Every structure is written in C-alpha cells, then in structure tokens.
Image 1: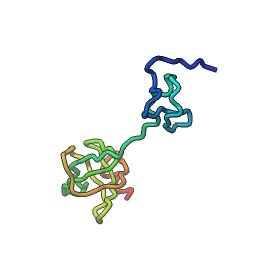
Image 2: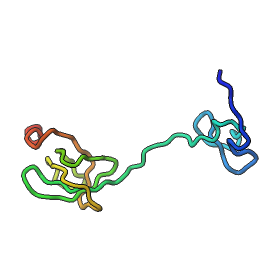
Image 3: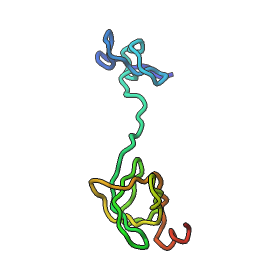
Image 4: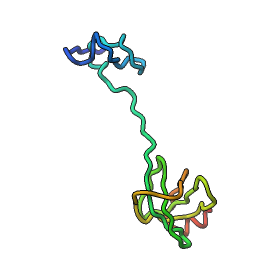
Length: 119
C-alpha cells in the first residue's frame, strides 16, 4: 500500500471547489489534502474539425471538413460523405481553413489504383 502524500495546498479544503475522488467523480467530500485529489480526472479527446482540399482520383477538386478524423496530405482515402453521393477515392492535396463537404468516414489506401479497385 502506497503512502498518501499531503501538502498544504495540494487539494482544496473547506472550499466550494470539488476534488477528484478515487472513483473518478468530483466532490467536496473527497478533499482530504492528498496530491491525488488535485488531479484533473479523465481526459477525453474533443471532436476536432479539420479542413482539407482533396482531388478525386478521376479528377475534380473538393473542399471538405472532417470531425475527429485526421487525414494526411498526399495520401489516398476512400471518403464517405455525410450528406451527398460524392463518396469516392480522393488524394488529400492540402489543409485549408474551411470546407464545403462533410466526411464521416475515411479508409486509407496506398494509391488511387488500389482504392478504385477495392471500391
């Protein structure tokens, strides 16, 4: 069993601020001065929006945005668009500030030929 270390200001006491409890929740009742109680708890990734320029493997450029999907410039993806019928094989050519088509799924391929033959 490890020793709990306490410090004068390691966690709030007699305050309206809550502390991290052992079960992962926050409560003022858990503020006992141990270093554990000053933790920030569980951290989850936020759904970041990223914007790209893509070129269809058969020609044609689109400006897209993705939520929580990070694409690599110069890589080929089969992109599944959320609100239209433009799903196809695309090469990511650049990142940009805004997009017009929303992607909800992307499958990575080595090249356009592999992507087209698989789809």
